Amino acid sequence: MNRVLHGLLLAVCLGLSVTLQTVASAQEPEEEARLLKAVFIYNFAKFTRWPDHVLSDRDYPLTICTAGSDEMLDALARLAGRQVQGRQVVLQPIDHGENSPPCHLLYIATSERNSFPETIAQVNGDPVLTISELPGFARGGGVIELYREQGRIRFLVNLRVARERGLEISSRLLNLAEIVNGEGGQ
Image (cartoon, rainbow, N blue to C red; front, side, top):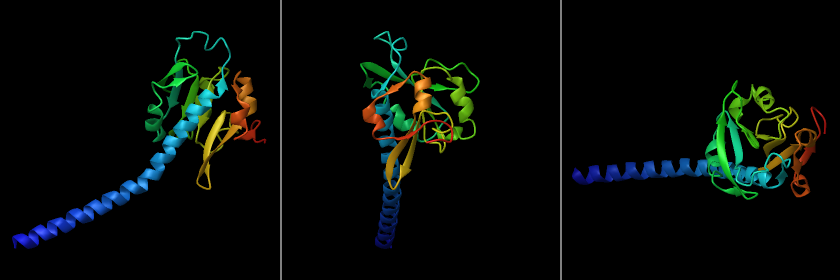
C-alpha cells in the first residue's frame, strides 16, 4: 500500500511539474516581449533630444512617468537606475486630475484605453515623449505607438506631435519607424 501511495504521489508531482512548466513556458514569450519593449523605450530615450532648457542641470535625472497599469510596468521598473544620456533613469507614477510631476517620457498603460487623450492633455505643450501600446495612440496625439506585427515589435512615430513638443528624434530611430504626421494621416 505504501509503495502504491508513493507511486501515486510521484505521478501527481510529475504531472503538476509538467503543467507548471507548460504554463511557465507559455508565459516566457510574453515576458520576453515586454522586456524587449522596455529596451525599445530605453532606446527611444537614448535617441531623443529634449530642448536644452529641459535637461540643463547635469545632475537632473531622466524621469519616466507611468499612467495606469499593465504588465509592462514591471519591465519598465528594470530601467530605474540605468543611465540615459548621462542621467539616471527614475520612474514616477502619475494620477488623473493631479498636476503631473516633471516627466521627460510618459508611458501610458493599456488600462488607459478610454482616457489616454486626457492623460496626454496633462502634459500638453510640454516636451514629453509619450509612448503607449494602445491602438491609435500615435494618430490620436501620442508620439510613439508600439505594436506587434508578424511576431515583431514595431513602432509608429507621430513626427508632427514630436516637433510640436520640441523633441528631436534621431534619424537612426526614424529609419526604423513607420511615420505618421497627425490625426488620421500618414
